[in-house]
Image 1 (cartoon, helix red, strand yellow):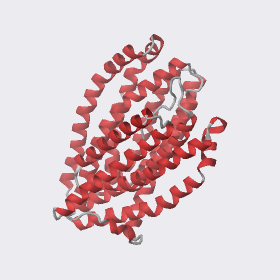
Image 2: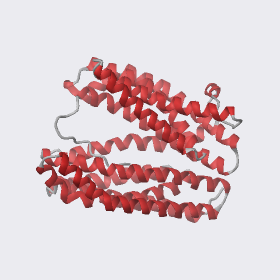
Image 3: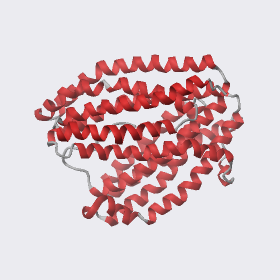
Image 4: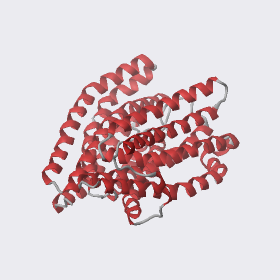
Length: 412
């Protein structure tokens, strides 16, 4: 969903790292949507209904579904790795090294896929601190491991090892948390449930999860679209766009955290059949999100400007300054989107977000961006104007589904 720019200032990333990293990221995003978001929705609804056994059952069946899909898919990717990497990286790629990097990452992707379900389970029952701890552990292991292995002379393979270890460490952290909850007498998912056949609960996870999985995969196409729109831009414009996109991505991260917590609250209210609590959850998301968005809108442009001035050349700073406010105003759209997504997803409607994203991306963002960036040569300013066109279309389409759900009165 994030509007991320893939264009980077020189020096460019190594083709082998770009190719292996792209495949890994697509797989991670696919499984995060399939098991993580779907699991969170169903777990939160069961928790709201006062059914701890139901939360355990959902998590167990989601784990089983993920394992049933991930194993053959990742094995297939591993076997087809040389061909896939040549397709992505072209003639410049070192196929043998890139394949080795991808093979190292694939076990980490499996851990990440299973960990996504555990994250969804923890968030669904309101245990978000352990999710934060797991994320910190993952980032620490990834960065420290990669730096240590690079310093030891392992080379690019060290980065892949660090990434795989980081993904595995997050899942192991969550698994330890589950073990502690089980010892305290809580009903928790059992790993032996991985051997249970896929059933109706797994089918419901699939029904809710596949649109989110595709949304994650196709969102990678947004970077390709931006690259096409800026392909004729100068190096300073590319650098300015990349820096501004990277800093405003922090706003998405902050507000998306509120959206994730709000989704659990709304889904619990629906599971419990509490209309008043559902409305209060929406108002709480709006109130807290508005406060955070206002702070980001006030502080974001000045902090980004300071970072640009102290880090980059004057031509990059001059290119970026006029678009700072235009970029940071997107926080209003992001706030609107997380509220609408929370309403739709809590009603088990994940197709709405996929539909809105596909239409806004390829029927609005691409043609409008082509006109502004390429035909009328607005450059980077045209790109960020196009971002607003995307958000307007995305939120408008999503609002239609959200209003329908609110009028339906479904609270069970």
